Image 1 (cartoon, rainbow, N blue to C red):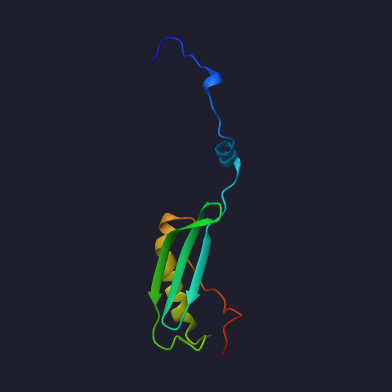
Image 2 (spheres, helix red, strand yellow):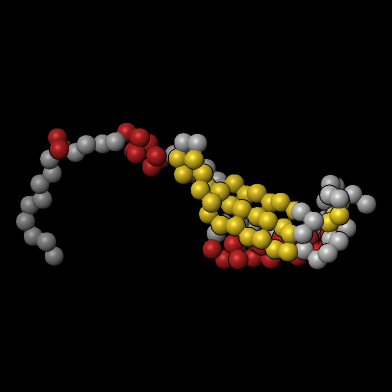
Amino acid sequence: MFKGKISFDASRLKLNAAALEGLFKPKSPPLIGADVSSSAVKMVELTNSGPNRYRVERYAIESLPKDSVVDGNINNLDAVCDALSAATSAWAQTSRILPWRCRTRPSSVKK
């Protein structure tokens, strides 16, 4: 245990206003991007690392079975959902991102 006097000289304390302000501002949430192409599902997570700067936190690429996506149309929704789920499953263990689940048929899927 420490015994004695602790001195504190407030005149020597220099505060950086920007750093102090950053302590109390909420952090912006990460940005998630997903690209579904005819051969793979690619996902990326970006975080804001300063003014007009972003940093790649993690990424994933999962291949799709042949003819799952043809000419921009999803033919095999289950395969695309499985690929999205596989891409996010590792992220869910280490971040706030929840695993992907396809519950309903998206309206953007063309028949």
